[in-house]
Amino acid sequence: MSFTLPRPAEPGMILSDVDTPALLLDLDAFETNLDHLHAPLAESQIRVRPHSKSHKCPEIALRQMARGAVGVCCQKVTEAEAMVAGGIPNVLVSNQVVGPRKIERLVALARRARVSVLVDDATNVAALNAAAAEAGTTLDVLIEINVGANRCGIEPGKPAVALAELVDTSDSLNFKGIHAYQGAAQHVRSPEDRRLLIELAVQMVSNTLTLLGEKGIRCDIVTGAGTGTYPLEAASGVYTELQPGSYIFMDADYGRNMGTDGKPVHEFQQSLFVLATVMSRALPGRAVVDAGLKALSVDSGLPLVADEGAEYLGASDEHGVLRLDDQSRFKLGDKIRLIPGHCDPTVNLYDWIVGYRGDTVECVWPIAARGALY
Image (tube, rainbow, N blue to C red; front, side, top):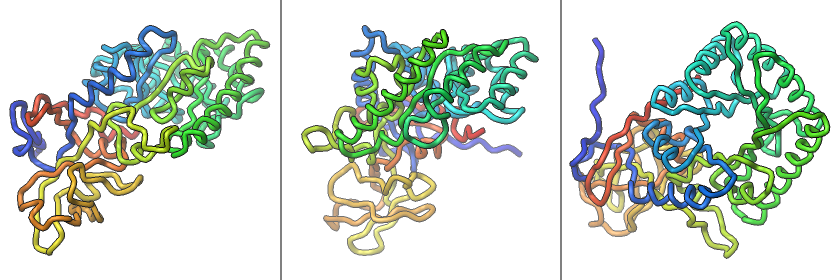
């Protein structure tokens, strides 16, 4: 017998009636964030391809595209499938896709939408080419180069160019460009340190582009950048496409990045919250809420309490313990907004995102790619 989880809210509800834990989206702040990023870039030659791993929600991706995004990035084939099913016509799987079943699904998706993928290995290039040929289609491919994050990516320069030559001569693959994402720079606190890391990445990309030009290989796209550094890549003269993701939501960890004035950067507004309910006041000076490890990712630290007067001290599976400044501050049954430490994995814990304005629920959107890990 199947069971369908009930939605935590319905349009028209007031926030105090929303069941918890629930993922909340302040629509006013969300739309301000969209406009802040997209509007200044609308007249430029730099394209925006936001990262859907942050939201996993086609409804949000459609709103990003309405503001000029050329498509979205996805990290997994299932994410890409969810986005295409939700009406997104152009996806970059900004990751390596390895293994026959995954590649088969990727190639099948390329017959329904514009799909591109990253490579950093010649064996993977051969497997993608063979699968695309068998399916009677072609696949767009970008070379991922390691620009300092030391995760995936072939070394820049000659190794990257040799791999690009292999892609360029593969019958069922189209070489489209370079993927150069300095993920390690996104949460570096000092603006000067962030700038130096991106300058190094830009130099690696520039050197690789020079070598590609000497080989007569056309490179249409240089893509990368994130919420923490995208102005630097945009101003580089090298990047043609930007991939910020967290800018629509923000989180406690991004709030720790410093600006040039030595104060936290407040370029984007906090729009994402986890709504929790006070479920116990049994201990003096403490409140226990119903949002713990299964409701919040704590890999980047504990959540913050959005309202003054309390501190989130610790989490277990189903409980979060708050220290209260004022014994009478929160009563049993009160609702509290929490700011996640890390937005991306927190979103992946939920089936729905509850959009609200003021005190009223306006929409409830499915997080269609929730759990899309393969």
